[in-house]
Image (cartoon, rainbow, N blue to C red; front, side, top):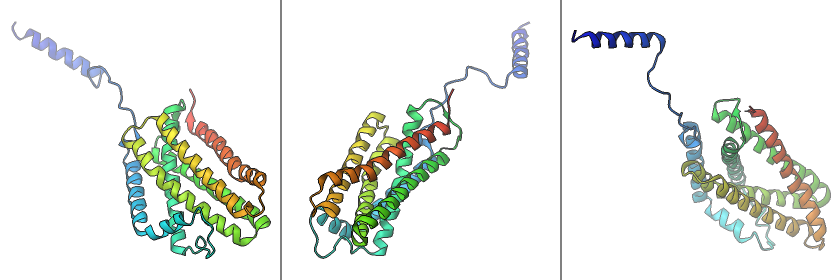
Length: 254
């Protein structure tokens, strides 16, 4: 008789095992964060190593560009850019596209309702990165053809190199912000404010160089403003609309 409760318990356990594969109450799943994703971590670390090494080996080039940025150069210092320096700046812009895609994916995952159709985060990040690459490529091509028609080849090439340098600097500035956002849980509100500040600084510098290169000698400030809105603000707004449509297509709306 003393062993009867044990026998009953064993039978009860056997019955529960036949109808259920686990005991207890299911807990809440751990939220999927970018900081816990191995692929995202590897991308960020590679971008960090690349940016730091680039700044270390290109200090002379960066200091020369910054020192002549706000002054008129009679020796065409801004045009004396080697092919290796151009490639490095292009790689910095590509790294920036990856960084911005990680940040915007994080913002979309937190604020846009619904689950992503593709479960793999790296694929979604790469799709957004391709969209960023398309934005820069389209904007620069439009700039090239318009500037070539109205201002000639020398000023067109000078302004393209300026745009490339500003975009590379923007990529460098956004790297610590994105690492804070991913690894140190920087709030979405603060991240948006910081990225907005970097974007505004980018557009102010671009507007200044538009006026300095194309319209300074003619004194046409209104034409500078119209040129800037048509070739800088309009593509940015169009990209924001395309990004929203892409996020809505990548997410399942319940």
